[in-house]
Image 1 (cartoon, rainbow, N blue to C red):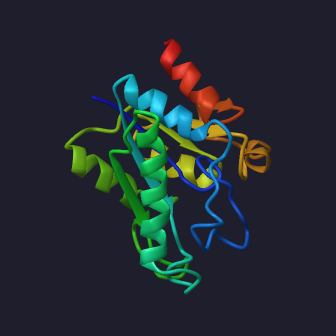
Image 2 (cartoon, rainbow, N blue to C red; image 1 turned 45 degrees about the vertical axis):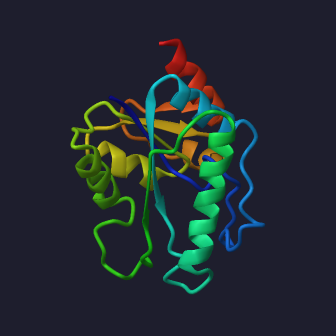
Length: 177
């Protein structure tokens, strides 16, 4: 199985410091849906690991989050692809959970779901915590410059991090190799 783990906000869809609180605010980044569909059609298993502390903060409901994820899955399906798994952390920063990135709980959930080792599995994020969570489980880090990626690129990155303009460029790279 060729597995890839993607962050959501800033990688797949527009990010906002005010949070993505509604289906209307959930807007895919240019080329992101196509990139996911291309990877899926080429045999990649697509998993998403996303912090969604807006739930704990009361900014949106689980039903709203489910609607956002249903829209994502619908758009990818319309292009012949599949999002195989979405795992999210609903907790706030002070909740002390093990699933909020940079902790590895979401990645451990994904590994358990697919009964696989995450060694060398590509993980794509726009923030340091996305990359740190994946690297802690042996994933290969990919930073995209969308979302918070430009700002993140100025920080020391985990060893071996590859930097790409966006998710489409990551897909191009993975499909060429």
